[in-house]
Image 1: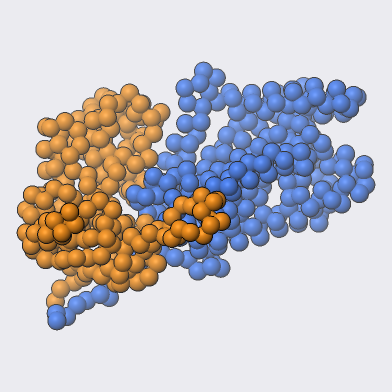
Image 2: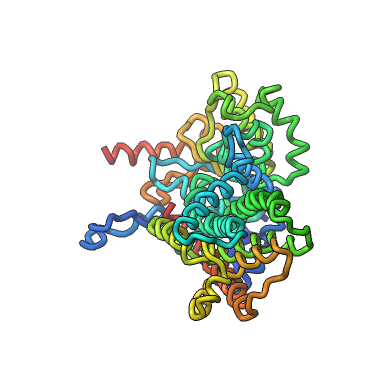
Length: 239
Length: 282
C-alpha cells in the first residue's frame, strides 16, 4: 500500500496579461497566458521527483500550485503534511535589521514558530559562518554573506514535503559545496521532494522520477535518463 | 493498480467561507502572531531608519504641520479659539493615521509581491501588520499632547484614554475600505492613485482644520458632515483631551462605528474571496 503525498488533478492555470489602455480599447490581444494546461501528477511519500523543461514551461508555477501560492483555475491540488518551498533564499531580508533579526523575520515568513527559531539560532549562526557579524545590520553584508544566511535559515526547515526551485549554487565555491551537501541532506531527510533544476547531473543522481514539461503540459514522466532524453529530443525538434 | 490511501490529503490553499471571513481573519492573526511580530518590527524599525532625529519625527511632524496650519488660519480667520492649535494637532494625528492605514492596506499586496510569490500564508497578515505599525507610531505622535496639557493647564483625567481609542477607531475605519480595494489594486494600480487623492481631499472634508462645533454653529453643515465616519474619532480625541466624554450625537457615533464595522466585514470577505485570483496579477 503506497501513501500519496501530493496529488495534482487536471490543473490548469492562466496568468492574465497586462494590457495598456489602447490595447483594451482595440480588444485585439489575448487576455491571458496559459501557464499550466491540464496537468496531473501524483507523488508518493518518500519519492524524489524532478521537473525539467525550458524557461517558462510552467515548472515553477507547478511548484507554486503545490505550495498553495497560486490556486488553480481548474482542477485541484491536494497534499498531506507540511509543505515548504525553497526558492529565492532571503525573501523579506531588510537592510536596516541585523542578521539575527532578519533570520527571525525570514524564519517566521517560512513558517517557523518562535521557540523553534530560538533553538535553531545557534545552528544558523554556525552554518552561515557569520559569527559576530550576526548582530550587524544586513546592509553591511556582502552578497555572499546574505546568501549564506538565507540558506542557513531556509535549510533549518524540516518539512514533510520539500519543494526546491533552483536554489543550488550560492556563495563562493567552498560554500557552494557546503550548500549543495546541505540541500542533499534536506532532500534525504524530507519525506517527499519535488525539485526543479537545470542541473541534469544532480537530477539523475537524486531523483526517482523526472518529469519533462513543455508549454505548460507534461510531456514525459519516467526514469531520469529517459526524461532527459525526451527533453533533448523535443529541444532538437524545436530548433 | 495499487491501492492508494488518500484520506489524509487536504486541499492546498485554504479558503474561507464568505460570511465567516472577518472572524477567521482574527484567528489567523492569533495563529501567525510570531510572523506578525517580526513584520511589525521590520516596518517600525525601518520607518525612521538612518535619520538623526529618529522617532522624534513622529512627534515633530504633526507639531510642525499644525504650526503651519495655525499660521494659515490666523491669516484667514483672525481671532481663533485659543485651543485651535491643539485641535489641528489632534486632527492631523487622527486623520493621518486613517490616511496611512488606508493607503497601507490598499497597497498591502502590491508592496509585498516578492514575498507573496515565494511563500504562502494568509495575505491578510500583510494588511494587519502594516496597520499595527502605523497605529504604534501614531500613538507615539500623540505623546505630543502631554506637554500641551501643561501649556493649557488641563487636569490629567481618565478621559485622555479616549485619544488612543479614537486612534484605534480611525485605523479600524480604514481597514475595511482598504481590504475591499487591495485585490483590485493588484489588477490595476489606478486604485492606489485614486486612494491617494481621496486621502488628500478627505483632509479638508474631515474636521482636521475645522471642528464639529464649527459645523454645528452653521446648522445645516452638521447634518451633512455627520455622515463622514471620521468626524466622530477626531471629535472624540479632542473632547478626551479636554477631559470630557464627547457630546457627539449618538446617531453620529453609530454612523461612524457602523461604517467601519460594515466595511470591515465586507472588506474581509472580498479580500479572502479574491486574494487568490488577485495575486496572479502581481
